[in-house]
Image (cartoon, rainbow, N blue to C red; front, side, top):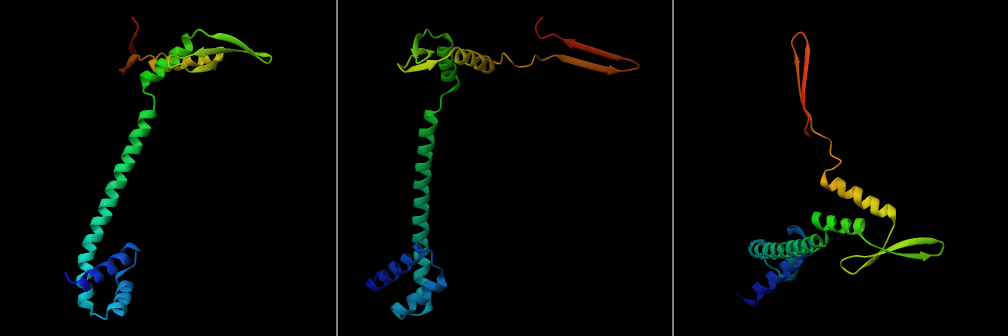
Amino acid sequence: MKADQNAHRIFILDRLRKGQERKEILQQFAKAYKVGTKTFDSRLKEVRVQYANEVRTINEKAEEGIAKEVEALKSKIMTSVERQVYLSEIANCKSDIKKLGNQFFQIVELSDGRKEFISQADKLKAIAELNKMGGDYAPKQVEQNTEVNGGITISWQDPNP
């Protein structure tokens, strides 16, 4: 590859990276190098392949980075079991009662060593949330059949015999 061909490619690649279109690059190229349109189009074709490869590489690396960030964020989200353990610790905890000003607070040390202020309302909320997670508030399913033949027949099955 000749030095001037390399200079042509660098010139065009720089303009493509800046987002310039063919027409604009051609005007600047013709002024700088005093060559014809055929030469320019030949160099542009070669450089577009190189530029497309650069863009693809950048996009792949960006996607990898995003995927790593997503995985890092996912690792910070508690699983269902972890949430149930945490709520169970709140509901079952033994606490030290401390007076702060005119109010009393229960201080609980969790299994990971953290200490938290827990009220009786917090314990009840934890129990309610555990009940929801366990499906204890789910409506009971009842099997119901209805027939209309001169009269209505309803049959149902109690899920808790």
